Length: 293
Image 1 (cartoon, rainbow, N blue to C red):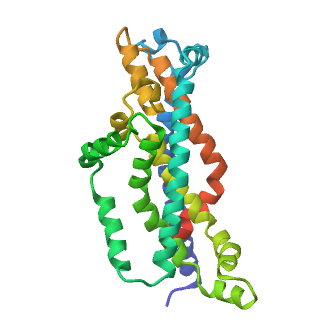
Image 2 (cartoon, helix red, strand yellow):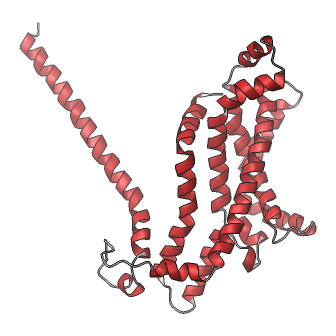
Image 3 (cartoon, rainbow, N blue to C red):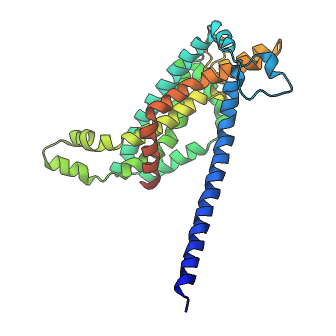
């Protein structure tokens, strides 16, 4: 039979093994995090350096003699703010429209029984699987035929149609995870069905709406190919198109990587601000959506 000393030794070995495993996992996590953060750091670092310094064979890892001249040159043209306005308009319209339609569809799928409900859910998934590139010609002709080419409304409608299917599927899980008994109990207390839904169910759906809104925001903000097709006019370019045009303009003389990196950093700033505002709700929403429905 094992002695007390041998049991203690075995226990210490298991503890040491677990501790070593945690240390190795922590080191791997730190390395992965650094590999993920480094491109962002390099973009910001390069935006603070002159083009001559960036073209040197010796890399500069710290902007010791950094300058904001690249940002001043990018902003002085004025086209950045025009593109920013277009991007914000398109993104806000797309997010609002997507959440509105997806929310109503998720409520209908989860709360009501009607003929063709399963077929509708299957159709939502099939639409999500269609490649966006295969729809460009049809989208262009449709938008052009109604006079919405080079229009914020036109490209916003296409964005909403592209993002709604997945958002419906995401919100369906949140709605299905909230028991209908809560609404029925509130109705017993004297509330109407609408009042019970708005006071009881809707606040519980806030994390799901935020998580879905983040997805819609990122899709609309970073979208490039649809905007390239539907917004050919230079004064209607979104920020991704503006950044591409900025790089092309630099390439006609010599690519000024300092200004390119400064422009890229400016494009990322609104996304960072948005995430700082919604990060709390977004985290809880993603976790809740993973276990509901």
